[in-house]
Amino acid sequence: MSSVTERIRQSLVSLHMARALETLDHILRKLEKGELSAIEAIDALLAEELTLREGRRIGVALRTARLMPIKTLESFDFSFQPSLDRNRIMALAELEFVRRAEVLHLLGPPGTGKSHLATAIGVAAVKAGRSVYRSTLVELIEALGKAEREGRLAEKLRFYSRASLLIVDEIGYLPITTGGANLFFQLVNARYEKGAMILTSNRGFAEWGDIFGDPVVATALLDRLLHHAVVVQIEGASYRLRNHADLIPEHTRAHATLTPPPPPKRRGRPPRMETLSHSMG
Ligand code: ADP
Ligand code: MG
Image (cartoon, rainbow, N blue to C red; front, side, top):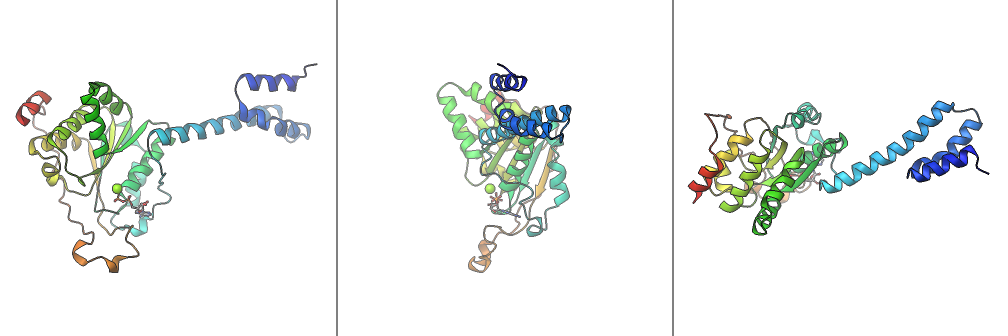
């Protein structure tokens, strides 16, 4: 004998709605007690399933985006970093810059929360249904270099261009070879005005020539990365060292030594890749 509830159970199994199946008994009991109307019961059943699936989607997306361990804006102590405008960060977390495919630069000395904030905005983007990918600059360039050696560079560039938000962390800690700078330029060019980026760096833009080992590539990179850009500069002490400030010699303490960004100037078309690779030899 197949009752209606038995049929519902079978349907939920066939539809792979495990969470709804789990809560069915509970909801049926509430119906019997008159605590729910029929329409509320349908709503509750679907909401349970949807909440579970949404949570699962977010979990998978956070891992795929490499946003683990998770950082959030709620766990960021703005009072520790008074140079940082909380309202500005909260406005950026509304993700309009992602929709507009713009670039957010987070600049500041080590330990001032650049990676934390980049990750937190990435997490907000994942929750809002955006595709996100996070990498350090060195990892990114290594992956592009490997793909190039294996003849899969175009495919790899497409992969990094797909995410609607690409986070490139730790620009400036390690010097980049000319070949590496060239690969990063190709990626930036591919994403230019198509996808948003968050870049974090402990160095000012004036030092990009040193970081990328070539002032021509650095200029071409900055040309694109500052065109539609928001620059947030953090000037403060390291959160990592907050309890050990007395152990750090004065001259190595994190001081704000960043040069202000040059105004985003654009005269005519930016140099094309061919001319760039040519001038790089
Ligand atoms: P940066 O990338 O600027 O070097 P991080 O974002 O990695 O610094 O911060 C270092 C550590 O301190 C991380 O664990 C981060 O979560 C934590 N942290 C930094 N600033 C804050 C803050 N203002 N409130 C809470 N935690 C912070
Ligand atoms: Mg960092």
